[in-house]
Image (cartoon, rainbow, N blue to C red; front, side, top):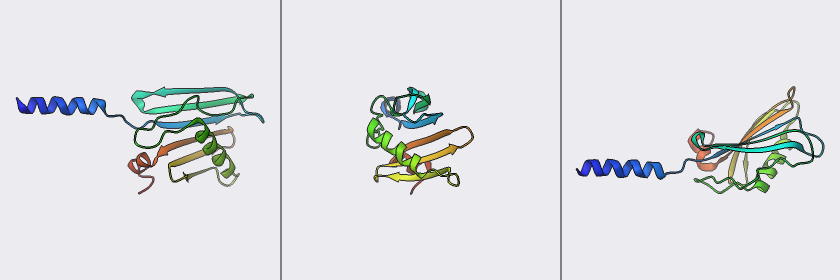
Length: 136
């Protein structure tokens, strides 16, 4: 009987654990002043939030709300926008992908497709970056 109760408590505990949400940003075909469409979609079952910014417009590319990352600090819209600006500043025709550590808080991977004008960058908490093998 003790084993059954222990297993039930273990399963209940697992169901209460929160997995890390990994925000991924997609910027495509932007204009001088921003984007026409900015959407934020979260898939809890995939532990992923995607912020998609497309077509020329007047809206800045940032998440609509704070993205909670359970194993690290939350990612505010302002911080996400700052990270995006840093990533954009690092792009050159010769360097279209890379990684960076932001403020000793977030680890970022990025990739830019010049032909499609499509930038994708993913922000990880340091704990998640370690789990994924990006850092030690």
